[in-house]
Length: 571
Image 1 (spheres, rainbow, N blue to C red):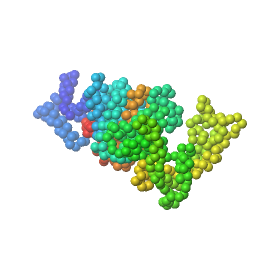
Image 2: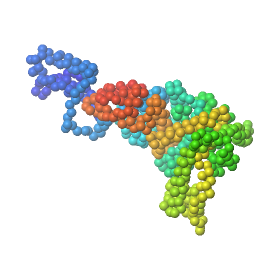
Image 3: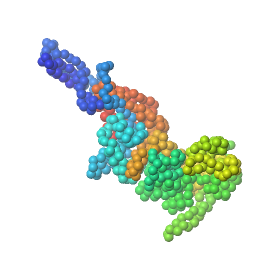
Image 4: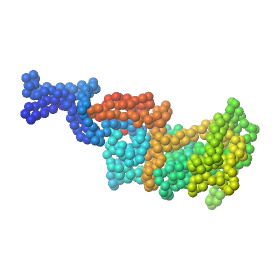
């Protein structure tokens, strides 16, 4: 605050104490009177030197404000908003900024900026895309439009965002390796068990390309997709990912990502835990030849399961009952797999692996419930086939005999003339035999049955992770088209996922990621007057984040200087 001497048209000088502030809309410095004093020619009779006296008063007011932190604001109820006013700023991103900078992502990106011929603020662009992907998942265009919501230097054109995506893609592999080292150093990383699975994401277009292809989409929307294989460590923190063409089968994705993992991340022996979609002789052989291990589930129904396996599952001999609703048994059993010799010819080799089978009454009830839902849908298809579209028939068609799907029209029609569609009762009876049974195979012969089940059950982490990418982060539908743009988009999603998982780790898992995102997105301040802002939301989730991350999201009133310091302290 300082003394302002305002010379009026009549020549008289009016004294007031004013404070400078930066207008949040125009970004220009402005002044606001905080104390009116009076005309100099009247004050000269009261003070020996009015100028010197009130300069001292202004100085004392500044010092008192710094100490007491109390100010009085005057509001003009007739004041109107200028077009383009945005008086709300998000401060929840400061928790994300803390993790972003702890991981050293800013250092990595700034170093890449220095090596570029054309100036491109890679670090600031990446920060904006990551913050928006977490707090307000949207298109790149919308994300750029939201840049004013943050107290960061996001002053770059939309064109720079699209130019940056392929640059991110070029540096992806090195960045992920760097992040692996940072996570290992700062948070600890256990890779003795790694969890792997594959999912796919659809695109907002119909055209296909080398990477974007139509395949077995899990959402069954019929759109072109891209496959992503994701690898997590034992704690559920993402390690790396790899994109594959949409028509790649799940089991074909494991070898490429494991090869890169071992080569680039300098890992010792790892045990891959994965679902039955990754269970193939080739994948088993690779793990064994590389000195690694595997824990896979396997099919016990249909043609994928041998007669011997089915008989072993249903044979009561060897089961141990643990309570009234759960039984388990296991065996060491020779299994034949195919490997390639020095001439690249397939050779069959016998290995020992542990087979574990268990029965759960809870699992049986869930299986029966899901099948009954499909049978109900099948009956609807039989009675009124024209009412159901292709997507609606998923899971029900296999229980119907005499009905086929016309791939061109998407309509249900009788398989042959004079054939009445009906339920496949024999299939239903066959499936009922295996309700409640589950089977796991592993190379880890020394593990107990309980240890194998526990390691496999931890696979829920990756299933939950994929759910987060598709719901909270809204990775799909994908709007970018070029290969570099696609890779850059998925890199921002991966980084967002990693930051959220670390935030979850640092807060002891007390709140779900969904609740943390919701709270951080509501942690906003709005402009009161001059340089003053007021926080508008605080709950137990933000209190937990403040406690474990070191943020101060509970402060009700803040100056612009305070807010900038809060952001700076996260870097």
